[in-house]
Image 1 (spheres, one colour):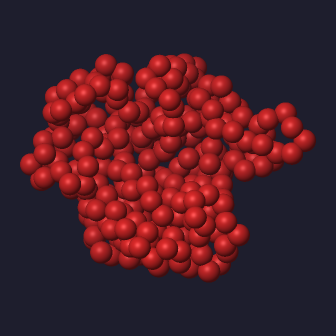
Image 2 (image 1 turned 90 degrees about the vertical axis):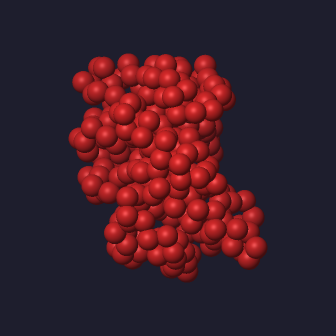
Length: 277
């Protein structure tokens, strides 16, 4: 397994980018260039990563391909196609997006999100993105989410079967699967079940944490790694069983210091359970 995260310095060239990653002890990285990068630039960064033994984990395609607004939907589809092309050009483990929402907020809940009609629309949408690009080196993936498909190991497995494309893979965010006290207090089991069901398809993972408020009505909040209840010992051991190169990427923190604290916690747990990052 490989820990990674963003870097907080200006990196105008591949050498400075690698230096910034090495300074943080990261062996995995977010894609350092945008989809408008020319082939020479992409190749230079890919070669630098290869020489430094850094895995480029993912290219984000964050947008709403299920938007009810046709212009927004078309723009999102084009963004996803370009992101998938970039992931294939640079040799990233995957291109990742959420499936999208039927509501106005691109990543928010909506009564239609978890319906059969939306499931079928996701299948059609993902197929269209993959078929348009025809990637050979990377995978298109959907981040697990609490209020849209895929919201469980079961729904992800159903999507894998329904989409039926070799280059469709799995993105694992354990925190995003936790949507109830039941899942919160048994999240170690949730992690084990997800990896047992889908481990061979996992291309990249996100690292964050979650906390349940002491309220009568359920309120779950994302928090910095090490300050919540996610079972990192189980997560790291399960991911380690998938091989040496699966990326675990820190995300959603407010600055460099917060990322350093999160990385320190992950490394401390990894040392306790005998996992190499």
